[in-house]
Length: 340
Image 1 (cartoon, rainbow, N blue to C red):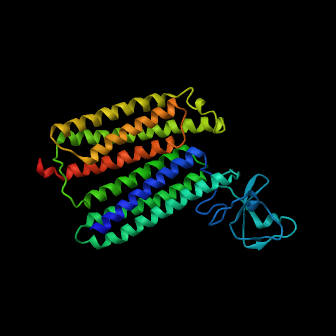
Image 2: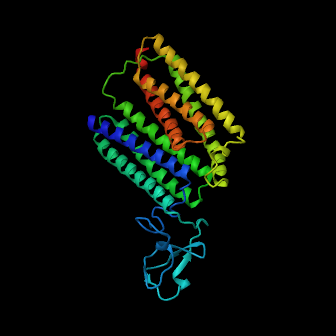
Image 3: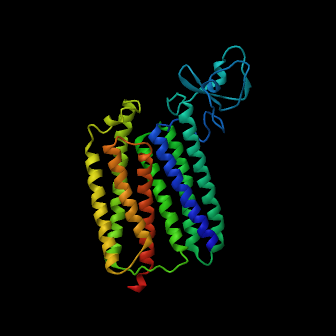
């Protein structure tokens, strides 16, 4: 039991690193650093210079290798060696999108993001394989491990759709929500593997408030993605500089998002006070309260201090951490219903 518990914890950590990496990709505008998927410009290891993806004479090209030609992406139809001039019949236009820029910085940030995602997939696969030994004695463990594996495979497919759409906002939002669902499933699995008896006593008031908090957190994430879309447009219009202007004229979603964070903090404070009244010290909920404080702090820093470096991906990471720990707390609490 301990080994699969450790594998679950490792998988959770790696998935959160993927979320952090994804936030970094978006913060730096590197989402189209690799214009194709799962390869990058048709390479398993991406190019390091623009000359690597420009047409060259007397060069061996592999099938599906991508180059930039006349400010458009084209890919090789087959393996061949080029001659003194380009033969257009050997190439097809890349039609999934019209993005045809190369920036080595963006390319490698996106590539590392994908690499971490692949490691996360491998970790969850190993977790699922190890869970098969529980299929008869404790089937819920195997089912949850299977759901997490299915989720991460679907997430990979969503990643391809995001790239093919040239970072369509709606697809990015679904991609983010899927990542939160995966960590939630893994936290539920972790609660089922909990070896120590929880000191939590089921309380309907706490359970209801926790569920309300989770719903509010999901709404908060959705409003945050809408606000993020606005910031993305502003970042692009100012060429990722003049950070003081990104929220100079904030949309209504900004005020909603800011006010909602206060409501969430109040709801969780009520849970904290109830636990204290019941003389229950719960480490998980203490972590949640600390994370909520950090979350609000990073939000304040972004608005009042013009988006200090890394505050955006950290803000996103903390949001998903709060949801994960709250799911874990809720499941542990409801596991003790018989104590009520």
